[in-house]
Amino acid sequence: MYKISKEDAYFFTNGKLFDAKRIFGSFLNRNAEGVIESTRFTVYAPNAKHVSVIGDFNDWSIYAHALTKIDDLGVWSVTIPWNLEWATYKYFIDTGSETLYKADPYATFAEERPGTSSKVYDIDGYQWNDHDWQYSKGKVYDKPMAIYELHLGSWRRRYGQFVKYNEIVDELIQHIKEQNFTHVELMPVYEHPLDDSWGYQGTGYFAATSRFGVPKDLMYMIDRLHQENIGVLLDWVPGHICRDAHGLYFFDGTPLFEHDEEWKRENKVWGTANLDLSKGTTRSFLISNALFWMEYFHIDGFRIDAVANLIYYLGDLRNGVNEGALHFLRELSTQIFKKDDRVLLMAEDSTAYPGVTKPVSAGGLGFNYKWNMGFMNDVLKYFKKDPIYRKWHHNNITFGLTYAFSEQFILPFSHDEVVHGKGTLLTKMSGDYWQKFANYKTLIGLWITHPGKKLLFMGQEFAQFSEWDHNDSLDWNLFEYESHRTANRFVRDMLDLYKNSKELYEQDHDPKGFMWIDPNNKAQSIFSYCRFARDGSFYVVVLNMTPLAHHNYELGVPQKGTYVEVINSDRDIYGGSNQYNGARLFTYDGKRHNQEQYIKMLIAPLSVTILKLEK
Image (cartoon, rainbow, N blue to C red):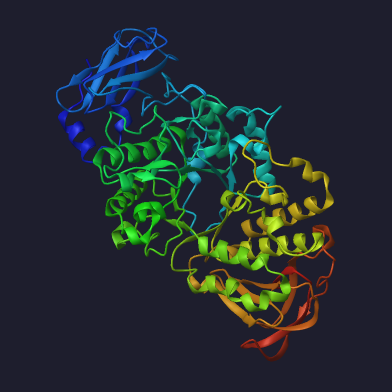
């Protein structure tokens, strides 16, 4: 019989065992010739009176295969002398007062919904071919990062059905490369019972969801993406769990992983249960899970969902700081970066809690990126306004620069902004049909040229009209329409410019990378600024937030010389009115906007113009 050591049990219960998958779950045991001779099941259920493994291999009998409690460590185990690969199973748990039928918390595969059982799966043995990616990928702080947020179940469907991991990958690679994104972020792909939760209410943290195939199909998809130099990030939810009866919730009849106190545990807003991250068993489970995804699926980073709900009990400042959760986050980042310091650890955090992206050694929480929710909210609020009123909301654009370098930020336009009646990026924009597209392109220009890495939800790259529907494909038919094709061309060209312009990314986290030219032109709702690379090269960015064109606009610039237009969202190739600066722009001596020289330029209506000093 398998024996867990007292040392393992001690570290597990104290939150210091970070490879718990080595101990718990189902395991196929092979002889010297590699033939599977037996299957072991091991589970942690300290408050159970009796545990059996039941499944399609023993007619779901609660008596056929009882587990033995190992000493008094709370660990139960049994080895069955059969090859049970692909077998469907659950744990039958008798608590003395009730009987429970639970999926395996450490299972690496599960039957497809509406089934809720685990499956014995051989997670080992995939032959990876992403060696070049693993060798060459580096830290992204001074590199471009444009993330494509993806919901696999609704990106594309075929005949109304899900497309498998290994079948969707060719189209996905082609699209990501054509659009010039550098990374893809998968909304949760670990097992979850309800499509409507989008994966955020999970039951099988170690199991890649069976909706899209087997786990090795997901490995293949990630492998192929890596071979095309596309990073893969995972949306991960360590804060709360699904309350379905077969999941982690009250696993052995007690809140084994959750808070003991009901007010901390029951998240009534989301209908979930909050995990108690001060419990050693919960920390061991979750940190082991993150490292598992890194080891077995070569994940390049994690976006941690609902960090506000971790920092403060129930996400409410009035409930106080959750010190156990802070300890967990610091331990999580320490272990992740110990394994690979190039990994991205990103916080979806709407709080003003300080030091989220500071290292643990400097007193921070240890994330290396934080979603800039303030930027997203302020900017979208501004673009919803009719241009005639924008001069009174000028600070919605400028305020973000007062804190842009206080953390390391990602600028997100995520799925949360295109559901529940919020509209899409395009339909949020004010004005008539033409103005909506012009505003949309100006928004994209601001997003790309503002300090911070980038994230865009799928469908927004071609200005989808309809809100996201997780039960249907994106509206790919919109590419048949000129207005959407030209808008998408602008997004592609802006992302291409971003990826190939160190001025737009090299000093994302350094105030030296940004300089206002004129943040105060409220009367005309014009914003102008520079983005600098370390070598001093720079772009001049001009945003016109009204439908009025300005001819011979005198704009102060940092250096004498000749300026040329790099991109202009009003060009006809982008569906604009084709008012642009075709000729070179020469500087004149004279003080404008605190600069010693200026240029005279055309500023097109509702547009972004980017200029560069000609060498």
